[in-house]
Amino acid sequence: LLHQKTYLVDGELKQWEGDTAEVYSTISSTENYKPTLLGTIPQLGEKEALDALNSACSAYDKGKGLWPTMKVIDRIACMEKFVEQMKTKREEVVKLLMWEIGKNLPDSEKEFDRTVDYIYDTIEAYKQIDRNSAKFEKNSGVYAHIRRGPLGVVLCLGPYNYPLNETFTLLIPALIMGNPVIFKPAKIGVLLISPLLEAFQNSFPKGAVNIVYGRGRVLATPIMQSGKIDVLALIGNSKSANALQAQHPKGNRLRMVLGLEAKNPAIVLPHADLDLAVEECIAGTLSFNGQRCTALKVLYVHESIVDEFNKRFSEKVDALKFGNPWETGVKLTPLPEVEKPGYIQELIDDALEKGAKKQNEKGGKTSENFIFPAVLYPVTKDMRVFKEEQFGPVIPVVPFKNIDTPLDDMAESNYGQQVSLFGKDIDTLSPLIDTLVNLVCRVNLNSSCQRGPDVYPFTGRKDSAYGTLSVHDALRSFSIRTFVASKDN
Ligand code: G3H
Image (cartoon, rainbow, N blue to C red; front, side):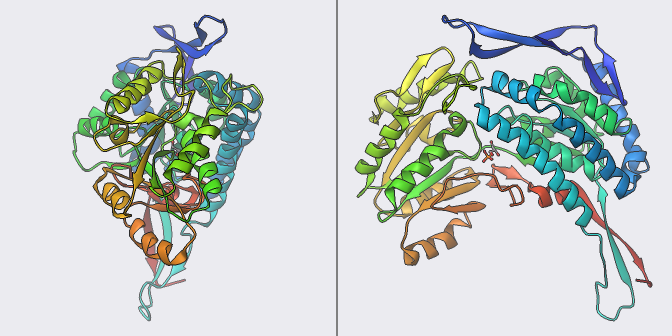
């Protein structure tokens, strides 16, 4: 059991004697389902939230503080020290990733290693960013010595499905650009931050990083209502983002970097390589049980090949192994949100009532903490599974005759992150790609949707995102371009 008794504010690991909350895993260690107690975390209150805010504001000191004015080389040294110490915690963090969010061992290891790589890549990108001089205007005789400056105090909130990696794609660039950060770990995937607390404390100056535990509403409300937050950095859902933004007293004058919902479609054209499409759609729909914003959440398959697609796809789905995250070859794992199996079952029941058929034998609720993925066909617009971001193991298949069907649906959708396009004929693909890039931000040709490689821009249109992440783009998202104009180069 891990009892987290401290939190990080003002450069100190403060002892907490007040209320705590128990953290459970939905992985059951007994045959009859019983959630496993993993530990406890502090339930800080408004006072501690405001202490964290004051700590970050002092570190920033309206731009005059130690952290925002620190030399590039020194800030890099802090980040390097942190990542070196973080690497020693790999085993503990990976184990907690498996227990807290049910991510399988290879993917948990990947999440940790990807985060370490991301930090090193960020350091390299930071060394290069806009540190040049240029004459903006020919013959003006004035040189602009470009610098990137911080934006201010950042409130950072991450998601449960990548509680380390995606959270750090906000926190690390924000920090290295000189912004002090207040970070509240996700509700699920919270204990895995504990092994890193000391590394944060040892590596960064007082107030640069503040880590608080407790209920989002209790902590984030006073912080947002203070009007002292300069940037809201959140990966999660738009409901939370909107609620937090509304609490900011200065209205729209709040900078935001947001990664939100998506309903990424796959479009399988008549002459697509069917085996490849099936393989990619399996990975795209069901990696981490479909709990990824980049997951394929609806499959449009041309009517001429849809029966064959459904057959091959459903066989592959039923062959996926379910088990505990550390077991070899396991692809499907217990779902960390207790309410998720019931919700997914509701989507299935609704689709079946409205005329869809389950294509695979195993699909449907199997236990308290798991639901086997169901392939549903034909899915129509009136079904909940067509409209809602399922964020879990259920796969709607929509037949189409005319390409305008998926294109019109995508144009009408509130989301616009990515699409997967499967086909071979370049004369068909080429004009289609020209349209698709205007509907989403990334077109994946004959491959499933994904965020990586992390140097690629990661964003979305409409309600899917605000601002851009990636190793390079995130540094820009968390900074402002400034320059010194002078007559000397
Ligand atoms: O949940 C959303 C993540 O950005 C997905 O990232 O495509 O690397 O799994 P991924």
